Image (cartoon, rainbow, N blue to C red; front, top):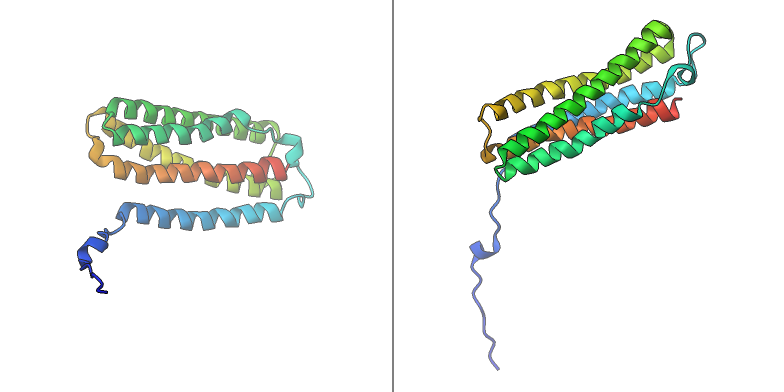
Length: 200
């Protein structure tokens, strides 16, 4: 009884390997570093909960920011829809969904500004008031600064889209930028739980 051997060509088994996208690798590294910074601020906030000896306490002055949170978390969906649109070459839809993302981010910042105004001018809570004020403004301010940076990048991208400089070829770069915005939204979930649920 003889056996038949089938020659196997090496290149048929090998899958072509491509270098990972440099932009995505860079963004992932940035997100890892930023996550470490946020973790330190979150741990500091948790450590100092209830240790303020004077001044307003969280339960006395903080209101749960439901509308602003819905707006920010919804922006993850709209930026994902903009990613899908540009990938399929639908630039008008891309501009519309990206514009919606920017609007939702601006609404979130508006609510944050209104909250800070109330806390500072009506409730007398500043960075120097007590440990709660110091940790609150540090953590929430760190997040707000990331939202501002993200919005600057998104507005710049939207202007490129509106002036016809965006095509389907740019989809991978846009996905890289969207990673940052998804990170900002994910961090807000943690900040919301720590500040407005656990810390209240």
